[in-house]
Length: 445
Image (cartoon, rainbow, N blue to C red; front, side, top):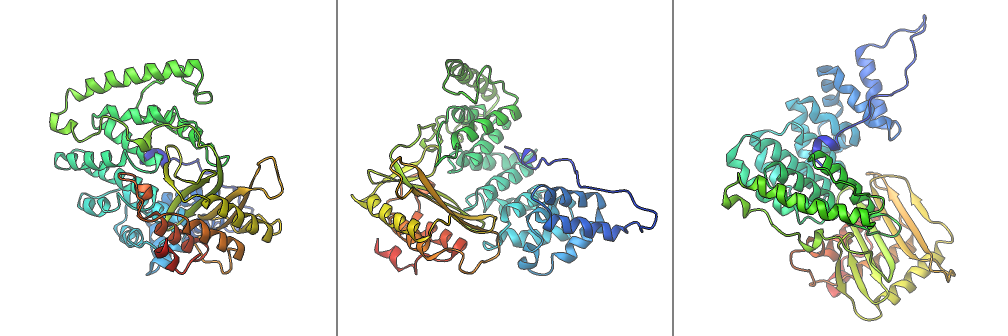
């Protein structure tokens, strides 16, 4: 979805009360500090609304935020993601100068917010700076930087082919949100065939341990078709495999191809060759994975997201939607299930550690003592600040075993999810709850 859609927010509904006779009205500076405070410590709903309210104060608010952002990325991070998100909307060069070092710092926890903030008023001379983050480990950063290039390219023929190549590359991105965004940009540039990526998402029924990833993709694709002003007919996202939906999808495919051919007539032949005409495997709708017994989901503020599953017949399933598959040595999953069971017993009924935030580890495993095959999930999470002793020792042992089971040297060509996967998973563990290995084990697999 385009950046404008992603940045839509609720109208400000912060509680107010009339000034009493003996109350002194707040000065502008006091009002600004009030909304700064709410942006940092309010509820999850209030924080972004309060941050956007600051925009109405203009330069005085920009001055105050510049003061609070300090001289280091650590000071800027202390503002919180909601305030970082709106800094770029002030279109103030001083705040912009604070945002670029944050995006360039791999340890800055709010890099997606910094990227979106910078993309709002992308400058023509920043093309190369944005382009270098199109393969960033964090999907929202990749998405925002393509949006920035699209904004810079507008009306600049010299940049058009480069933008097409970047967007075409993102059609094979490991993240479906990034793929849909790229498809919309390509359609806007006359390459309507890219909307077939959205139509494929309407067919998805995949899940990840109870999370309806396919359903989420279907509804996101519907919104994307709205952005592209394309009707999907009688398709029903709640029942994608019904006869009515299947007929609607068949009709949609035909109409998209006719529409694409009509738009492509105005394009030079050399430009058409820049955009793939067939969907790569990573973008195809696949049925739910069977025989899964173990799962690991890692979400890291700084290292990205990982979705891993182990099947009863010793396959490692990487990603969701159309996942990659790597064969494991016989007996690998059984050994991991045994370690998971011991970890579950050792945690003695506790299932959650930490505090809500952008860092999370989720372990899914068979519930010990339950013969019905139900799943037990153990979760640790935290915000951007380090937490000592966050991960209990049994989960550190389990995490180490899961990460060590990932084969090295088995990357699947053209599938970014499998490249240096073990090393990246170890790094994600370290950034969330601390290292699960001293790194030596990784070289022995």
